[in-house]
Length: 281
Image 1: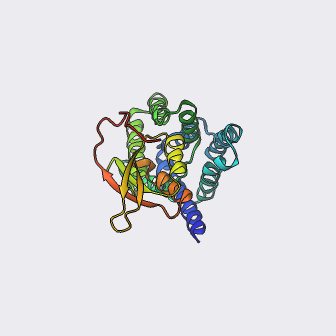
Image 2 (image 1 turned 90 degrees about the vertical axis):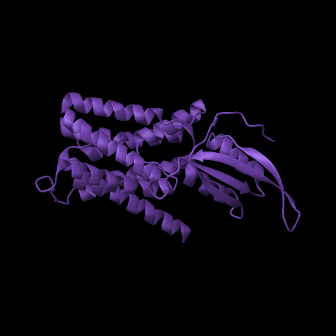
Image 3 (image 1 turned 45 degrees about the vertical axis):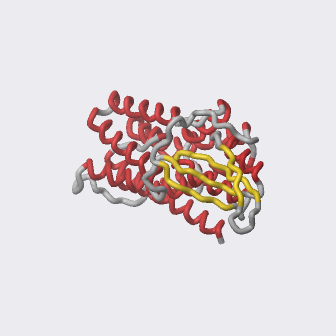
């Protein structure tokens, strides 16, 4: 049942992204972030098929994932990378023209909210969509980093290209779209704090530590604790992660140990987050 719910959420997310694009953004020639924005831009300026461009980009990067990693890693990206272009094609037949009756600013804001809400469904399930996000994950794994530099640089490139090829006004509207979508994907359903602190007690301590440090590339530390009633000795794994990786870490721990005790708290500010904390490894 849990898997069925997960796939339903993924399908809904991909469908909502497509509706946001075809009903609100594309009629006003506005762009979203990442590969979706790049494909839309080519369709506006050079009359390319947005679905074809998106599929080519996504399939090429999926092939890279397959060659570099394995089939299991490929599953993290496969479904949304194929479903989003498919739903964009299906929803392209919906003929709703709001450009004559609604201000372009409102179309930009509402289109970004709808599209961002669709992304939040995928984000919550620990999935990524689009070639740029996948390339960024590959770069982070190879360089042992956790950065969003590639996607942000690419978005800046898209905005500059719009300024040159279209107009400053369209670029400003597109900046609003990109910013709102980014805000939605990190804040929707996740709370308002920038960081989450995880306190974990698990019988599979080594596996959890390996997942946090090697897969997610975050630091952690251990505390010795004693049960109040049982007096049983135990260890608490403490790690603080950005809100964007909240669901990825939570679901990852549940897959490793579905009986693990997990306490999650909001962190509104983290100082010296790169400081090496003495750990018991």
